Image (tube, rainbow, N blue to C red; front, side, top):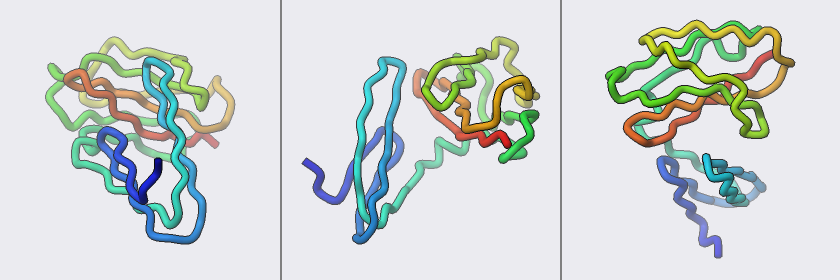
Length: 126
């Protein structure tokens, strides 16, 4: 039962009031949780700043910058808006140039596995 606060791994959601927001959480195991909330407050932990994506939004060509020890990076993947992996990256450097201009416009996600934990960044392709 929802009691005005939901904890999703590295993110804590708090409700204060008036409008509906829906959140879909997806993991490797295809577990899905949907939470509805009013006046959603979204607190991100500092671990989510371990990498950045720029420019974002993008025309399909963008950079992924890893601000962490590369020895801790186990896997980097590009996912579509359905959570399906469409590209994996095996040559991992601090700065990775990504070109997905052959894919349609839409919302994609970069998934970085650091020390066994998964972190996501949304990428908007126009």
